[in-house]
Amino acid sequence: VLCFDVLEHTAHPEKAIREAYRCLKPGGAALYHVPVSDTFLTVDWWMARLRPKSWAERMAAVGHDYGRMLSGGDLLAAFVGAGFQIRRAERFNVLLQNVFDYHLTIAHRILGLLFTRGIRLGGRRRPLSFSLYHRGIAPVIEWLTVPDRLLARAGIGASLYCVLSKPD
Image 1 (cartoon, rainbow, N blue to C red):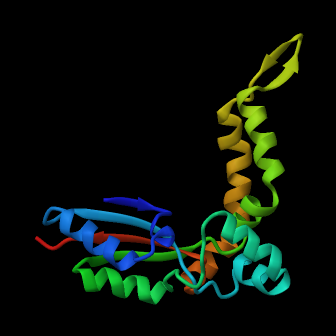
Image 2 (image 1 turned 45 degrees about the horizontal axis):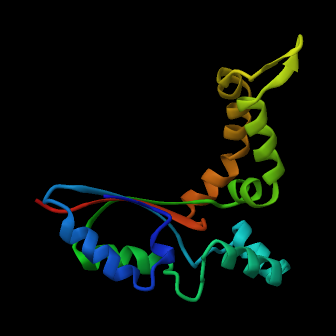
Image 3 (image 1 turned 90 degrees about the vertical axis):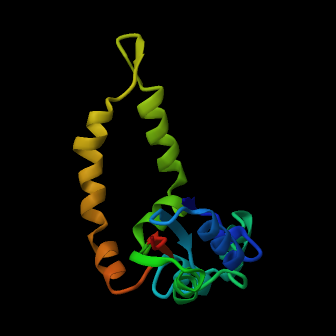
């Protein structure tokens, strides 16, 4: 079972979890990525305090209702309650990913154009090589996300990634 960014949009996430468990064969695996309601010290947490109106509008626009979303602990309890064994659970989406996603959307557009349409050289458009991204941009992003990974290890993050299994 793969379930990424779905449960937070359902009226009854516990029912969806139980149904996934029912459908999974014994010994099967499930991978979940779920934004959660307990976002202490994340960009979401800061934005909810510093710019509550614009933050609430942004969350509503993507279907995130924090009054209905589960906390990380409630989500894990729902998995266990359905019968899943938790193999791994990690927090992420602390600071930099959300800043990039929410506040640097122009950067997404520019990178997309450079790597798909390219730049004009010698009268012809030449897309940038994806190896440039992997050798030049990705290492910088990896270095910048060190604080995020450290905070996630401390249990801080706006999302939870879970690897689950159904016992044999």
